[in-house]
Length: 415
Image 1 (cartoon, rainbow, N blue to C red):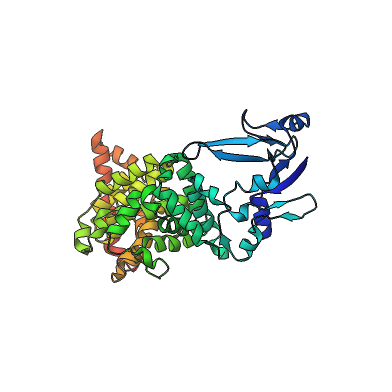
Image 2 (cartoon, rainbow, N blue to C red):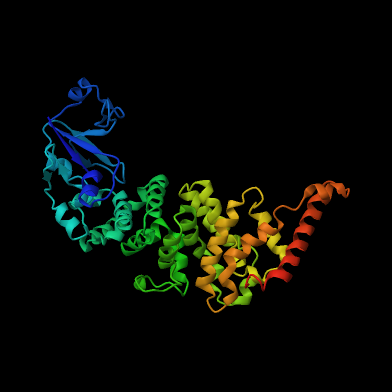
């Protein structure tokens, strides 16, 4: 029985990247041999075991045979006669198909080390085509390693196109799609994830809403993704990701381009839109389909619905600004003000660069909220207001105080 270190730990070690998890493959071993050494099996039918002390995963060498469709259409075979190379060939990318023995020697039958040297993401074998999840994994690896200069091999992109054409993506569960997307959104360059999905024609199947509206709007040309086009949402995601690591902000930024009203370039027409319920509905359905967590979903829906209002907030009435803060539940969830403010500031720069007033939208919404955040309810009760009249008077005072502040301090804050 021989044991080899495999997978991400080997890859990241060669790239001088930090890693925590270690995966091991056992060649020439059996389930009984591992159980006798007090390993704990993970599940009943899968040949993966946890080390009794380190709790690291040890998998018996195995092969996978396609016997159905989608991610689950595989028959796993594991026995002591399966070689290390047979185990490695079932993996997705060559950089993930490198093993290391107990003496530190590398076993690299598919030239993964060479691909690391040349910064190439390349499929191990034609069996890559059998697992649709590999499309998302490859796009995610491209995003996570883009800062090191990695790109996807042309022949791998072509295989991914074939998989998309065969509609293998339709067999992926929403949870697996979102899990890969969430991981990609946490990388240094999440825009690369969506760029690769578009390159292999998968974007319109995974995110049809984003793909449709991006293609429909005049400002997006996928053939110019590498150009410095600030009106390009994919490249805009690159910029916003360099400023903020919050997944909800990154995802919401991309979703708000679903807004059909964004097509309207007329500045004053945009001012008349308080809440774009159509765009909010589309984003909500997208999030429901992918089982996006509620904290991320809520921000995405609010951002899409109030996109135009936030972009024109300097020209909106104080009454409508108070209504906006009520609609986003700002008094109970003040963090939403910060998040939407950040998105408002970024998008204002992108959309209306000719309107200098918009450069401080970020500060404007936050300061406006702070001005009216702590108006005393007790003072209203002392005046004898009851029931619904309390809320009505509170909002009247908020509008009045906000109007007063805007009239006195707009010039001071350079709005």
